[in-house]
Length: 338
Image (cartoon, rainbow, N blue to C red; front, side, top):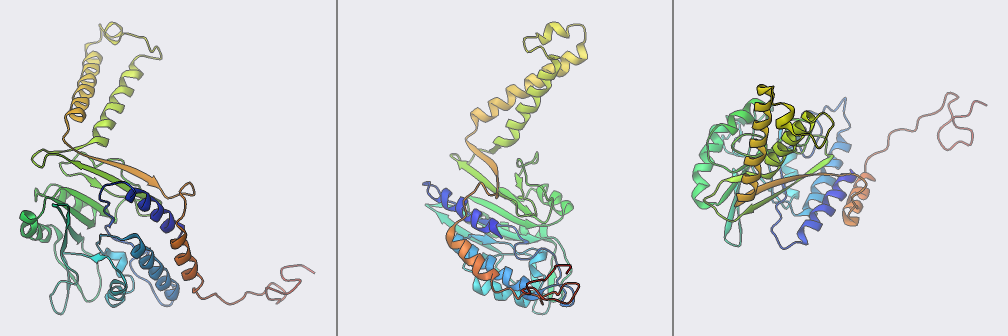
């Protein structure tokens, strides 16, 4: 669980800058699978690990968390106990109590940053769990957005869901500004995708932290995904380089003057580079992601390491296993053949 302490270090370093830092999670935070069985899984260990996570995240001052399907691995009652221990906001607009028909968590959260209001909406795709009624996510998101759109300047959807639901959400035209997704690919996003709304996910293995930088100078202008246009420039430059056949000084117009189809493709790539460069330079509002690996190159925050170590020490140890001759660990000849 060393990634928690490294994540804390990255967040602390970001807070040294004179800009607001939002710490968000789209779900599947506490457990690695959707169901834990008493006869197959170490329930006590799973609970201790979830407590380590919530205690660590409390130290990181999370802004909002959208519970995903795996977070209900030990049931709704246990997750509500975790919520009571947390100092951050659990939000979900489409998870309801099947008996009372009331929302289990607040549907959204609005925070004010020097007059600039950011809204968060949580939602999940359907999953099977007793006592939970999961309503269709897109329509619920639309209803909540309609309620808060006039109160906010920027709205982020935290979404734990399937690719088909994600595609429908992206094409919905609801009006929100950014989607942060969990429950999908194991790979972290390299850019916000080619859709109208940027979509980012940090992967499901906990190896990366997505640092997303948003700059807004004109609320009436569209958002430009710098990573996407930089990728287009790289790809087109690579195509043009390959067409030079190893000669960096080659003149492509001369080289392919008798091959109009190839020359047409070359000109298209030149146009892509020109248009992408213009888009970047003229952008008033930008978004850019940095996929930060949570590896040993990142220092671990001591306070979080202490939480992890103290928590892991509480995990019950299994029975001592004797060797082939019945000798327990600690015996001077344990594991020896004599």
